[in-house]
Image (tube, rainbow, N blue to C red):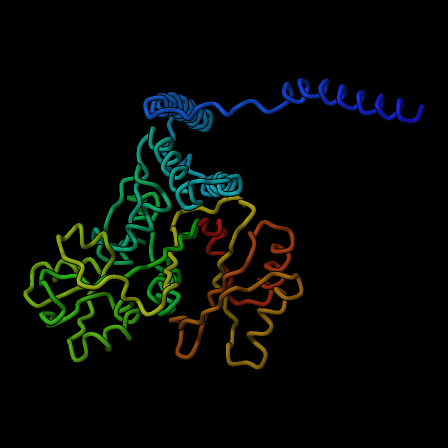
Length: 394
């Protein structure tokens, strides 16, 4: 009986396995579809391009409606909202999953917003020129290429053009991570009514350029004093004894390098293209993280974007009195407002009298910042909010 039972069990097992085999085959994953050939890939790209184009046009039409709803006779500057653009860029950056890098996605969205805004008329943006300067690059990085960029010869002229409403906005350098503050920009705020409505951080790569074919033929190097300072070690090592000539801008240095035998310039890649120069040595800045910060000048303040910075101009009656600076800073600490930068400059009211420029985290309209500023204002003999603006998106 036992042997008969064992045979029956083995037979039942074989039958079960045989019965299971068709079902297993039926549930096996389907074979992957054959890869698309080149022509099929191109057809899909064309279809995607059509959808992208349609969506961009839809966005442009919606941008038109925003302009119409705000004003029937307003100018483009009336519709420009830096805090809104900062929010759009941050959302694009947050949802980016690749394969495009964040920087590429941000550049695409900047250009789309720039083109949509320019349907009314392009924004006019003054900058420290001439063409080919890093400030021009900062303008295009911040506003996109659908603006009318106005190169001017000095920081003073940029302030004047925006004050007179001949330009909608202005862009000027404020500080460099290697060489520090551009004091002339700070000093102009002592008398200007303009507001800061944005900032740009630009990674600065300096190149030595000229019309000659080799470093040995360089007799002098022309560049802005800030750029000469940012490349000091490289110049001492590779061009010892060569004359260094400070000029008003890197673009002016590039122009001289084009026109003067023996002259080379330190400038960005754009200047080499604009002035037809050869790059003799690339990326000669002393620090790999060399970065310049620029301010966007306008005529009014804007609402919070969610990630903002506030810049103040303040002073006390007697800056040499014990605890004078502490009295200005204490309300910030009490209300937990971070001070990220402070600079002192002569007030130009009397000798040895100073004002302070302060950068704070947060917008002046945020409750904790507003409380700190109200307390600080009571202690200051001079108090001005120069701007509350979106932090640089990069």
